[in-house]
Image (cartoon, rainbow, N blue to C red; front, side):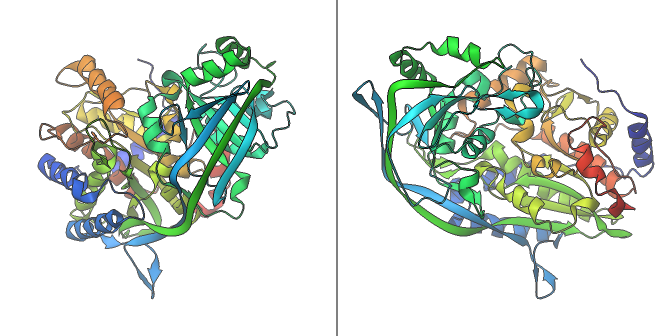
Length: 552
């Protein structure tokens, strides 16, 4: 196994932190199970933001945080902290069934929402979409990266046109190239594809779905993109959102290319080179017609806090998202409630129990915040809003430990984090994990871009040392075979599907031990004067260093 080398600085930091170790308490698996069971029950209706389920979730979490011994850490109201941070969001929803037509050399082919295509409710400010015969242009991976001397657009005029793009990076299939090999860069994320197409003035975007480079199947695409959409409120939303944002099935893309006299696989190979040039799908166009229900709503982050005894202005954050997909399209059994037991009732329950542990320990020197964010499933929006409007200064936030989809099964011999970032916070996890018989395993699927898919990224891109903890796959009972099989089954059959439901067979013993490790690292950090940092070659180091004077 490839091991991360500890820098001299990181070793010094870890040694100093260990000197201030507070023994980790035990965590009750039964209590974790009960909390996950409640949060993911049908009564919570999939915890959709800005629905009655949000109110129920907030009421439950506030009651649990109070009972755990936490204090409110949210917005100031009449000079006192409340339990929430208001998060204004743009909410959009397609009214009725959209009319979608693909014209292929004079012949019209009707497309069915959720089958061949998944169209998102627009976030560019539109209240209606009326696109008639918009030409289609294949722009490869849709990447414009000057620092890599890469431009898939090469001056093409996309006004009034629909861009067809591939998911992931140009070097995903080969594993070698200018974009980190198998590890996904932000250029490979679907969010980037839409943003760059908007900058290129495209009317719309069709992302070609393929399971391997996307890292999830079509069911996930359909369920995540055909329901209510949200975004933070922006002054110029069209600057980052084309009017039409959609995914299409690979089979449809292959057919479209063939009808235009093109070879999909051959053009994909060309798109993996710097010499690729945009290609028009001649004789083909897309029409779309539907109305949009648009409003600005207020969702909420839930915030508990323990004030530091010596340096209360310095903060350690534990974070997890409370939201899931709410009520959506029915599955084969007719179930419309997307319960989100693993994703992310587990992380939310972890916040409650970590808060309880800190509240029953001697008060830490630094403040500790337990941040339960909204709208992660809509694009990390709750964490993005907090990071853009922090309740506690980011420059004096020592670190963020994010928990997203923890494993409710038995204990593992290892742990991981999302992505392959190098930072002192990871060094501390590696050092502390040894006392629990756990070793660090690098992200086994860096091509999936998990680093950009969890709430820690909202902090990382602003320089704050932040990681998203991942449960291990080398199970004590069953080894890698059992762990990998369970992960594969969850991704294929339950992730973002109504079947992500609490199971009576889950022991939660592994999660209980994971929380001991997370508590240990956070407690050490909260009881020290150390400031973990990013590695010197990290893209986030300069941003963090720019605020160094505020930490003196």
